[in-house]
Length: 379
Figure: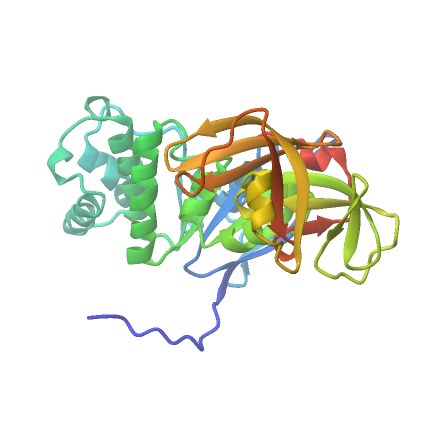
């Protein structure tokens, strides 16, 4: 039987962070963050080490006390509520399982603390074992299991007492790539089935895109981008987000009116924008897959469509990656670009060849900054 969803119902805010700050002496780990988390959503905090994402999660869990600000769940303050009374489950990168207990007893542990009856514990643990597909491992100790299986036990233990919110801090970081991707898929399906609110921390942009309904991108204790993975990738709000989420090409240019920029002595069309001053420094951002690379004779045979740009380049390297080709090129002025196309879509270019790069003006984003720190991102 399919569920009937009323699309007119607005999502309800479950968690509100209000002007949240955390200082350690002179160091500001979290800098005046305000954020609403919707009931039932999967939200990921994405950022590099030291960006403030784990500290924010720790304050939500109750392991860290805010220096100032407010944490509200269903409108009630949590700031003075101890962690075990917050109705919040927590899963860490280290599984933190009890080595002397088997899987069943590890999962049952939170229920015992809450003094639930033996029958109730059995019913809930059985349901969790089935949910994480570990029924046949119920009587194994953690040391007898793989890392992926242990992490499933940790997830089951966090879910067994039916918290309203599940917090996950880099839970798959210690696993190899294939297993990590399998567990990402399982987590996504688990979230769909249970409908609980999940707040997830990772530094892995691909993981964030794969799992989340929304992503909050952290930098220097602030949230610098918030939205769906699609929106943040297609229309990054700033150059930092553009360089952090996915791969980007940046062209340094100068504004030339409201619909053009000057790049290496050539005029390029841009999507018209009203707040540019002629001559001001701007940054044009182009995703690698948004451009076409053509040999000069191909470019001559194919007229340039209206609203498109074309620049001359020299190919420096071509890398075959199975389903795709990555082509590195350099412009006459020395700007390096990386472009990507599906393999088989065109004849591979050779290193040293001259070529033309084309893109639609509407496919490039414009930023009014050349801030170097925005472009030096460590994933």
